[in-house]
Image (cartoon, one colour):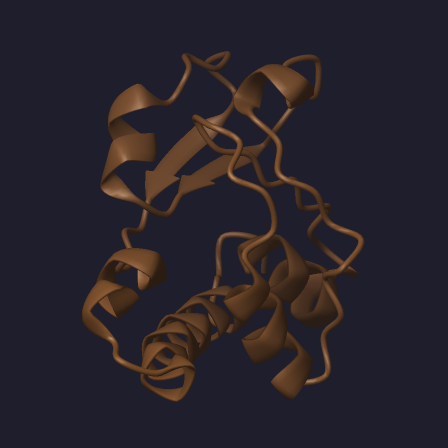
Length: 123
């Protein structure tokens, strides 16, 4: 979600990369809630930090506790920021219908969108 939202909202000043500790594939419910707000992330693919290890970053923003704990060490010029968000798949585990699950995905999507929209480190 974060990569798609960054490209859509702040693509003029952010060149986003997203990567996790493990590859999980594109969650279909994430694709649904992103499509609801006009963002197609169907071409995005799940990556690990190893997949982007040669990229240089000004900022690394971790969005979950596990990623924050396992985040690789970056050169001193890279500012690492942790802004944790709830994990939609975990929240949706007890949902009885897809619509109930989507409520969690929408909330987290909107929280990430607001964070990116208001990210002032670049302005």
